[in-house]
Image 1 (tube, rainbow, N blue to C red):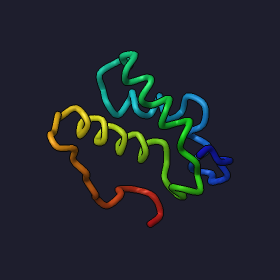
Image 2 (image 1 turned 90 degrees about the vertical axis):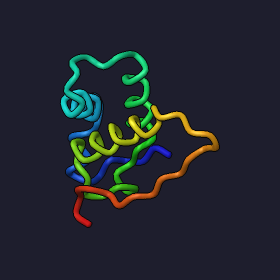
Image 3 (image 1 turned 120 degrees about the vertical axis):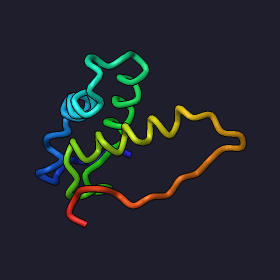
Length: 89
């Protein structure tokens, strides 16, 4: 679901803002094609009304954590629920 980014903090994540924040937080230099595609999909799907008050850095840190969670193969499928870090909660 793509929504308008009306939250001022979400403005920083528009365009390549989220990818830049993700790359900086990951600290490994340029993103590999799979990482770039992962961030692009998250950027396309994310809307400010879903995560009000969260900055691009907040979202990037959560995406890195989610990427690492997905790297670990699990059988059967695993579900993880955790509190959000950052934002104005």
